[in-house]
Length: 213
Image 1: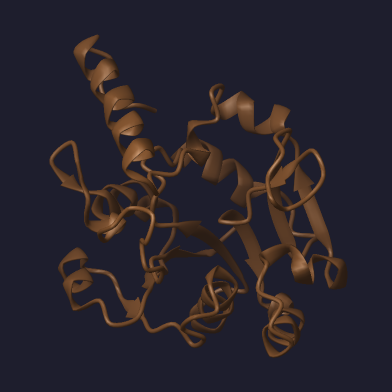
Image 2: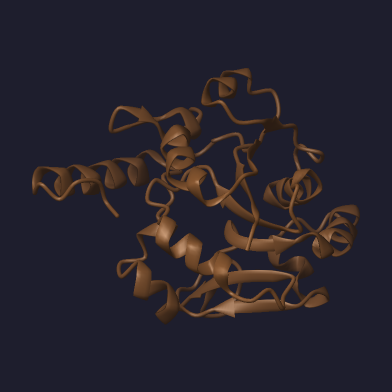
């Protein structure tokens, strides 16, 4: 089943201190690494970002954020407007270990939903004792009205619109079948996290295991 894929790169990288999408990761920019991994999964791959002429080097369209300054929720809305297909897999640009097998499995799930989102048993600022991996999720164009109501009301948390649409959870056990260590969700969004991800990838290379799956 076809779907678009959008890589959100519109943030300011404040915690990193420099553009995290351009960080060198084993000899290539982090964003180039992600593009290489996901390109075989779609015929409609693009980046959502504003004022990033340096992203033209990656050879995929760069779509300006329709709601700059409104965080990833505005980026998701932009992605859905730009997507050629009715469903769009949205990924943050700082995920060095995106797993094509897991992504293909998510895209193959029957589409009786507006949002398909992995859920982990870890507490974050979303509230409760679990986390919705909202920047590793599939969204339908049917989400646009609910998203834009939240943006108009300055409610910028991605989960803010979930109560207005059909959300299908992907439980952690499903994810671990393809990604036992949940590396897909490891964000290289701080200097410490970037160093951790690089060290992990280099350990695998040193053992002769090829790239981290």
